[in-house]
Length: 365
Image (tube, rainbow, N blue to C red; front, side):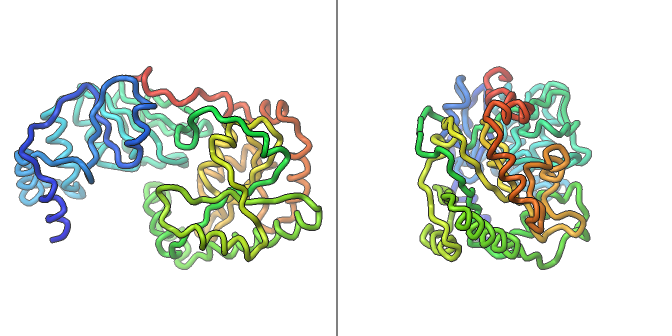
């Protein structure tokens, strides 16, 4: 009932606006003007006013003749596209199966799907896009084979502007992934992401995510204290997060790790020789693509047959010297080797990432 009421409250008698470009979006409204030079209309199902005529038609289909596993939103968006008839649909929801289906249905509309995170091979299963559709991926190590136009680009999510900072020089900074959610919610998120490629029997029922994280943070605190080297964390707090920043501060205080207040812009434009330590954040790849030195401790007790997420398994095979073992036995050796590597040497080593083109939608419109 609440679902229907929330939809009905957005019904409008206004006709649907038409545009050459429709952006199906729920996260990036505020920065789209920086990503697309041409005029466009944003279709955000949670905020858009629903046309009463399309709503009525969609409701009828949904109640009386909808195909299996098709949502009301997919039915409505299909009607919306039939009415507006754009040339291009852009979506940042590459995990939305409905959009993949619609891309095949609308033969004369180009669909541009942009990955919202790193994916392992085979993630999309048997789903494919049309010949002229585009998949923009952040995974230069993976070919997904759902489109003849798969383009690897640097992510746009963390980087904009041009800020210079010398305050990072030679520091070691941990990228916080602090969250206040339960293990069960994490499990559901991971299962949803990898349901296409990993059978549920390969998941632990009750993973202990924080066991490895806590062990690692305790180790780092002791290691850098003994070696008299400054060690900080960068807060995960930002506009979209729901946790209280004071709780994150208290969490890191348990390990005697202090916050270093620095923006993403300052990180990515810095030319200093700092090292970033990460768990399995997708920011790993954004850091590397901007020639930032990274060490990764990706271990979480989620998969029975793997100690880390599938996309990091692929990375580990290629760049094992940047991935710390679960027992931490190789940390000191790998940290020292990375610390002694010049930025030019590191750039050459990670060329597959830092040579990717900057994010650009305009050339595909």
